[in-house]
Image 1 (cartoon, rainbow, N blue to C red):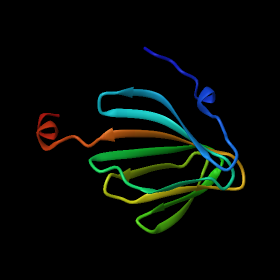
Image 2: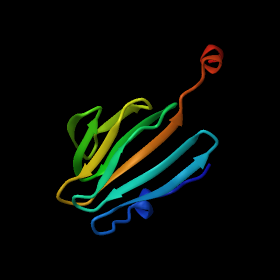
Image 3: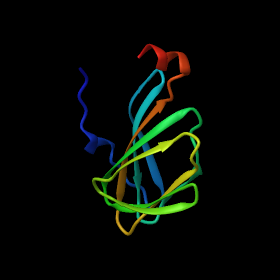
Length: 112
């Protein structure tokens, strides 16, 4: 077992976002994205992966495939690899806990 405290990964920089990796192994990565007020994560996608996001702190707006949605502490999102998405922080610091997993291939799915 490996135990970590997420508070040590919450680091804010004026007008920017930071990415702090918590765990990384094989096809999975878990990290925390931290946003100073108004900081943005540009529109992008993760082909062949699933993205799971927990809003740890604060609030902001996620845009997925052109559709904006307000999010706040405690909200959980699932974004598939073919979706374009972005995030813009709100008026205070915000943090997102992100789990990025490679989508299992067809052969894997048959064996589960």
